[in-house]
Image 1: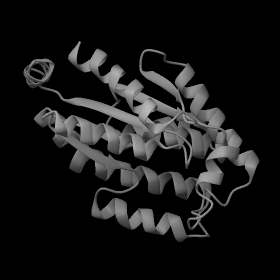
Image 2 (image 1 turned 30 degrees about the horizontal axis):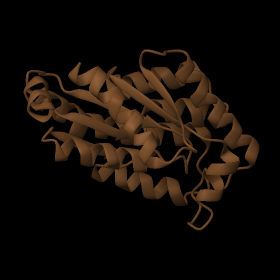
Image 3 (image 1 turned 30 degrees about the vertical axis):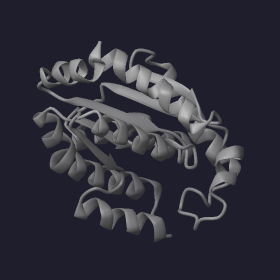
Image 4 (image 1 turned 45 degrees about the horizontal axis):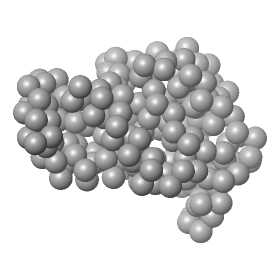
Length: 217
């Protein structure tokens, strides 16, 4: 059976597999993280699901602060996200990878590139240096960009309380999307870019096909 074969194959892998989902708010990336997590668990694959910022006490405090703080300048914003990311990597992601889990992360360093560099205008080299320190150079094995125009994504979330990013103007959100696309286009081996306007089930099947190819060979 395919199920037994993949389980046996995956258990031979000692370093785990790190999978990242990125995209603008309202793209559907969180839905895809959950769908992939549920399917892997159903198939008996040890899997850990995390989100940014969050997943640790430090991360959850920072998440609340960032969502409500109005006096946070762009560099402070970057450093707060990086602090949350450092805690998440050291306390959750790396230990799970060491056990051989598939780790699924809802956002990672690429959100800092898109939001703080392309959106806020911070120097990209500084962002990369800070993130390298925060993550100790940990990079994903697979990355998915759920791409969607901000005109569409913002309509999806217009019924929920806006966070600090969702309150920004349309030009900001277009710049963020451009940042994600430019990042993904630089590495076609790492990244799979998926149309976020597609039905969630169809997106999930594309994600699953990539997972089968890259993990189970």
